[in-house]
Each structure stands twice: as C-alpha cells, then as structure tokens.
Length: 294
Image (cartoon, rainbow, N blue to C red; front, side, top):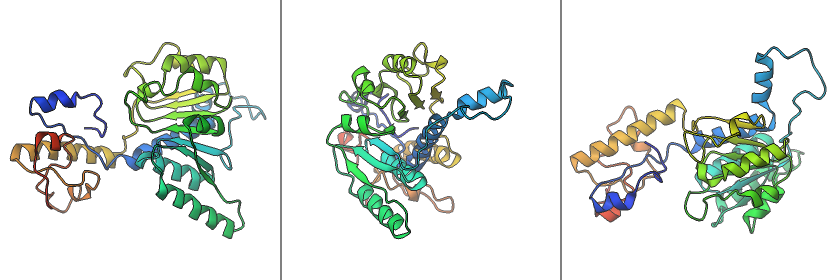
C-alpha cells in the first residue's frame, strides 16, 4: 500500500510467480504539500516556537524571538523534478514567488513552461518575475538554493546522496527537506552538521533506519521530524487502500494489468464500477501478464 516498493525483493517475487502491486497516481499532491509544510515549518521555526509557547516561556514580544527565513524572492532547489518534485516546485513558486533551480537527469519541460508563464504573469502585473534554471550538477543546486527539497528515486546512485561533503557546500542558513526516501541522506552526517550549524534547518518525513532516528537527531531544535506522513491525507490514504485492494481482487479474478498505472482515476470513482483490471502490477511484464485494452 505505497507507490515505492524498494522494501520488496521484486526479482525474488518474480522468480516465484508472485505479482507485486503498488499504488501510484494518488500521492503526488499530498506528498508535495507535506514537503511544502516541512519547508515552512523549518524556515519559520514553527515547532520550536510551539514548544516554547506550550512550556509557558513566552513573556511578550521581542524583536529577536524565533527569527527565521523569509521565502519570498528566495531560491527553491529541487533535486528530482518528477511528478512530486514538480508539484512541490509549483507550490513554492506560485505560493511564495520563489525562483527555481532544479537538477534532474531529464529536462522538465512542463515545469519550465509553468515557471516562464507565471513569470510573465507577474511581470504583466507589475511584479518581479520568477525565474528558472536547470542545473548542470546537483552541487549547483546545493550551493545556490535557500530551500532544497529531495525527490529522487532510491537506488545505488542516490544512497547517501546528501553526505558530509555536500552538506558542507550548502548555505549556512539553508533549509533541507526530505519526503522521499530516508537513505538518501547520511543521517549521522546530518546530525553533526545540525550541531555545527544551528541556523541550518531540516524537515524530515523519512529516516535512514525507520522507524528509528540516528542518535542525536531527536534533540536537534533545528530539525522538524514527522513519522512518514507524506501520504496521510484522507483522500490519498483511501485511494491507496482502494488501489491495493483492487490489485488483489484483480489478481484473484485473473484480470489483466491496467495499461497506464499513472492514470488511475477510473478506479477511484465512487459512483462507478472500477475497470476489470489490476491498477498497478510493477512486475506485470516480467510475469507475462496480459495488458488491459480498456
């Protein structure tokens, strides 16, 4: 009941004739919203301020109390501009008029066109236009961005993508967000970086050794940590449950695999019977399962 399946040995399942289903297509906006929430919470020190208030420590307004980072006009960096990364970028650009720098192996033409069009709209209305830049390297994003959100897949090339060397080139007051996969960040190195750089902030939804955090992370006031809730909106969780159940039902009934796992709206209509197909079987081709013509 997830879109990611790195916790399943798909090759072993395939060898044993076992279909592996997942639930794509319903997590994009929900996950992007959580990443945006973590960005705001970390930048404006929301959790620290909440704890301060609940502890009864507030004696009155002070000019230096919980001073954080302004987002408007700053640069948002996105590493991995797929569906979720692009949705997050749009939220930060349109919501806070941030400029974009992104790194991806593939050009995100739709995202670039969106930023260009929004920049033209702002200019036509007498405001400073937003800009975009596709970085040649990931390091360019880390050096230039004020807020960086990680959205890569997890594989051998992205394990510990954020390591001591890459943390060192980020801005001292940068905000780093991860709502993708925990092992993308070297969590031990992150804890040391947070200790050494108190104005550096991080927002984490995932962890290297879930459900555990590396020693010291829980004590870091400049870290916002939540328990893998990126998909935890009512609509998304209900959709995930429906898709997971329909994968099982479809396999039991011998249905073919759905032709486009990213176009799953027909399975989620409450007033209609779902198609006679498995919404998403990740190893359908390897198992030789027929593809739906619906």
